[in-house]
Image (tube, rainbow, N blue to C red; front, side, top):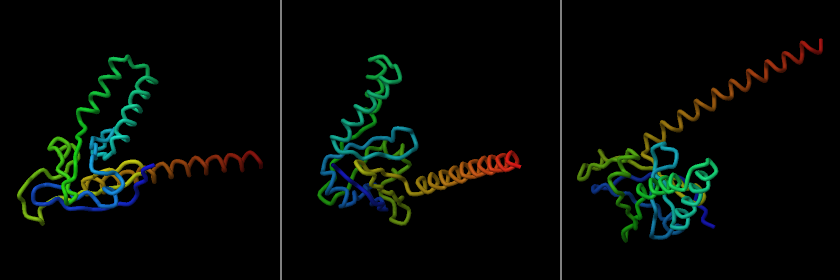
Length: 172
């Protein structure tokens, strides 16, 4: 079973390529299936061929459970497949992503720009796949999720305090 972990930040090179981290490359191999994330959060997912096929089966099962017709299921799989690219790292481990995927993820698509103006991407290993995030987009996502969790915690704490108060008043 494939098991990826860690986080690596890479800078796009002068031609807009990303260096795929060696620790991921050694586990995933040289044929990568890169697609948009399933929930349209603005990052890319890197899978092996097996992971790609497993994701297709997952989509089919979810859509079937939702009551979709065979034609609707096929449409969902087609949409996923159309936004997936098979990418092979070059001999130096660099990935050249299709422009559509770079645009989706907010990864700098400009070529031949000075190093200090190039964007950065973050690779995150998540078990059987990796994610590619544009650095500032990941930071904004993490900040938003932290705020959401804090709000949920405050609501849960307030509900717990109200319940405790009600129990105390009931026992008096």
